[in-house]
Image (cartoon, rainbow, N blue to C red):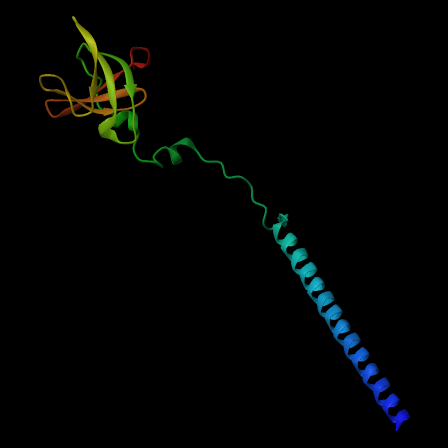
Length: 158
């Protein structure tokens, strides 16, 4: 009976030891599998980030197209210089233009003969019948008698 108890205790300790080893071995295998998966995913991610060099084949290469000026002259509409409002004949001097994305907040400093220059906002009257209708970096537009006219800076006048 005594030997039988020893045999049972040895068998129990062996099975506990084997179970611990099997659990450790399974955990190690799972850890290795996760590491391999992470390594593979990282490698694929870095391949996605690398630029792809595409070299055209002989059939894909094209000769550059030469366009004539006449073919592209009206690409963006008629010649804007021909359609531009006339330069104003009024004796006004454009001294500064302040453009703003909100057109109503744009303004210009305009001088008149025998008067000090003053700042005028879009929509304000310069004098009777003359309204500042637009402000641009190199010119302003005026409305006089329901017609648009352009006032340029003195050095950029056409």
